[in-house]
Image (spheres, rainbow, N blue to C red):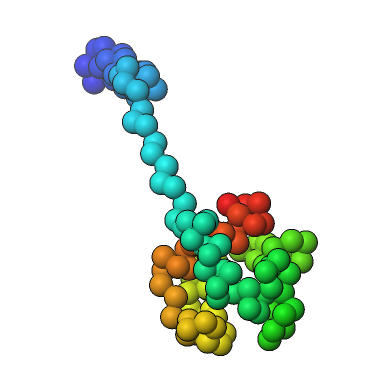
Length: 125
């Protein structure tokens, strides 16, 4: 082993660590947050048209088909994440035809809008 080679490696290691810790004086790129999917106003309009028939205008459920509450202290969706809720809505709702909306016929956008509105009503949107 040559004399001084361990010192050189040590300096290179510390130099590399120092450069990586300081980021070479560059600022990290700004993190851009995408707005959550869904339009609350559009979700409210769709809820009034398609969901309130069973879940009630106040979202407390029990109107038809033993529909659960969707907001408030007994909310059936209180622990659901936005994506899971939107997927459930899109694949399963409404359970019966309501005002020309057929079961399972909602688009992803409509489901996202409903999820945004429902989470907003649960103070999570």
